[in-house]
Amino acid sequence: MFIPKLYRSEDYNLMREIIKENSFALMISSVDKIRATHAMMMLNEDDPENAYIETHISRANPQAKTLKNGDEVLCDFLGAHTYISSSWYDHINVSTWNYEAVQIYGKIELMNHDELYAHLDKLTSKYEKFQQCPMMVKDMGKEFVEKEMKGAFGIKIIPNEIFIKQKLSQNRKEADYDNIINHLEGSDDNARKIAEKMKVIKK
Image (cartoon, rainbow, N blue to C red):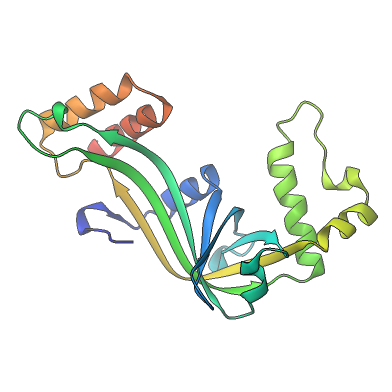
């Protein structure tokens, strides 16, 4: 990911936020050819000094058939994003897009049986707890879950490079910056979220 210095962030709390709120991300590999799979991902910080991404994909997926321990993948997380119209500037310029993104390069470690079971349990709990009648892994019965696990390819991604981008019109003068915020506040949820982010970095 190309990140001009102005938009580069080293805020790992921002990284955590983007991953948590946008966990249906893209895993890209190039072992035999370029392959990409959207998958649910979680940041495992049980050991904060050795945090990693955990995910799973279908064993029937051609990408799963090529990956092995030590292979490198790229995990791409797109956070809040919105269109920025050049009509909001007090001068002629081009339109653009404001957004937040995280890209993590890492080497994979295949999950063993117990790690995959724990991963599915955590992932299910994360999303089921908000349901009216949550269906947790423990409610499904171990025999059923282990049968379903045979079709899952569990992966841990150990980071070796992390890139955090926060492109929020930092290159604009104050009047244009404020006008962008005003327009975004009257738009959709993503736009309003970007507006709030812009207010924070302005302080």
